[in-house]
Length: 455
Image 1 (cartoon, helix red, strand yellow):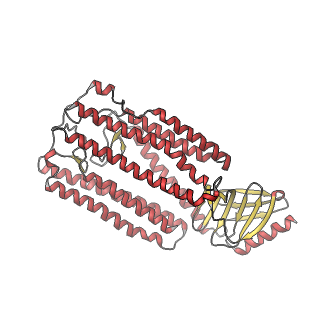
Image 2 (image 1 turned 180 degrees about the vertical axis):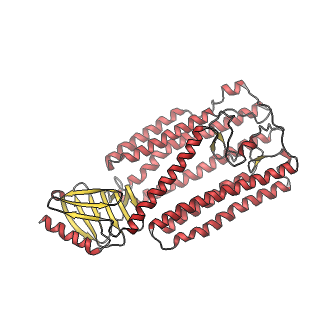
Image 3 (image 1 turned 180 degrees about the horizontal axis):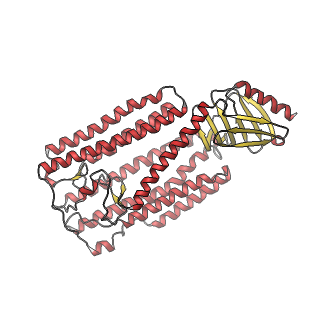
């Protein structure tokens, strides 16, 4: 687990370095958030600074990856998760700081050489405005996505009785429909005096981004449902389905990046056909690597790298989104660290009681489970959990597993300390229960008490 989580951080470091370093390559005559005259894009000062910026991004990614190797050391789970979140925030902060620093360095070169561009007046082509969405992929394609989501609902509820999964899918679908709507609201841009180039540029943006929203809407339901198939109706195909799931994830990432890089390349090719470029004064509003323009009515704008849609942080809704993002991160930190802190430091986190009616299992931050003696079919001591499992409502680490799971196709409740053996297994017709105390002797005692009450 430690190696896997460290690998996630390393992956994030280099993906962030790769993405941020794209800002050093000209797009719409912009390099590192600064617009330059066409004849200055290949100036030695500009090229040298751009190369240095890319090099620094990857140097930081490598340096942070070495620091993050501390996660490979043995430590308590709560400390591990706390360090994971802190190192993740450090990685984001370092990349952002470096970006701002080089934005200012590029601005200094422009000012010292007097390369500032004159701001062109706003140009509006009413025909282009009326037809701005003619190349968008139709929103009706989301009907297919909705049908797949309903099938997912049927199978998820029938096989697991789990409504959380379908709620997640619906949230993703509504988010993507919202993204499609925001793409449709993007105003046209007149980046040249050639109206045909402007029209083609606008159509490319609308088509590529709307296709991406619709495509993801169709792709996500089966992507999310495949883990369920591996534990329910096609259990004998577990390895095959796991491989398909991984391949689908890799395909989604590669396709998305390749698709948007193609859009970026086509946009630049269009602008290269025009001898003039209409600078609209955007540099001032991107000077901190994010867009902040109180005078702009747009909520979302294309970023300057050409691989994302960014929000206008001058808008109240965008500020709320940013605040919610911070709150979600803090909640995730709290949910991940606090229960593990209790589990790591409590002398007896998993407890049991046995009486003449029920066996009750309890653990921190999870509802206690009362098991009627009359429903218990069998009770055993086992040495390990089933190999195939899916967490449905709870959490699992190398040390603990707690909450609702599905093991070998059957619903299960776990109260497990992986360092304690044997494991108490209580079987009923509806589900199985797995329990360990930190003290193996207490686990054996629980087994004997239950057996005694069942006689």
